[in-house]
Length: 316
Image 1 (cartoon, rainbow, N blue to C red):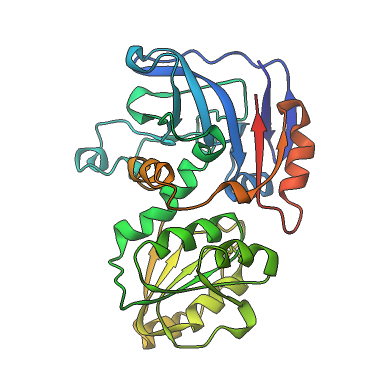
Image 2: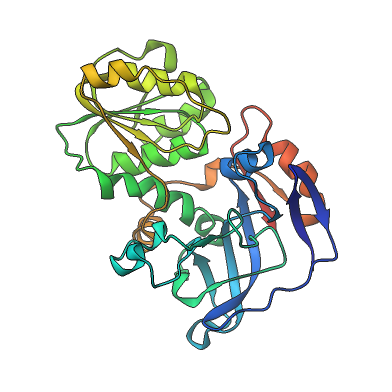
């Protein structure tokens, strides 16, 4: 089969990969659409020493291993848990001590003709949800995870820092809480996507200091982190949604003096993400900036890392 292979930070198109064999309780999935995420770009840069097929945002059709799902479109949670460790036994499988992670840790990903995942990780895509929309399920779930971790009310003033793919999704999901929301970025055309949905936006350099209860950092760079931290009032909460390829230097004293709560946030609830997408509560298709075949993998990644680019899709 065909696939996009990463090894020693070198990316290549491979036409000679073997079709994966599902283990017991796994399903073979034919990938029909997959999106390049910032984590994929960071893996190429060396964020984590991964070798294998990249890709974890996908829609596919089950071909074998799950009778009730055979022939159906599915999306899949990316953490394959062992079911035995202390985290699995306390219903926290995304932190399983023995997990593999699709296209990230010891499990080949979705930038290929086929991938495999445990059947329990799969979620059928409602007929009313297009494939273009469904491919955003994983990042929308990650955006919704913030609301699983922090109670947000209409009385809270919330800042989202970053107008990239993740920032635009986080802002849209946080808007559902009714909070006083501001999204900050550096690109007027991207912020316009949020403005069209009635979300208040501002340029990053105009963000008020010490004026927000909650700030969500979605840029993955030190400048964004510092902006989010400085925007918080005393006893505010800083949520980190981005992966960082390098080291991040922080002013720990400022966090201590202002008693800032720092929360890391990543994978989230797929069922709720699919429900939000099915309801049309957020708009994702304006984020699609390009479509490629697997054979065009290098061009696709070059496009994805071009400044100003949002979501790039592989289509089979």
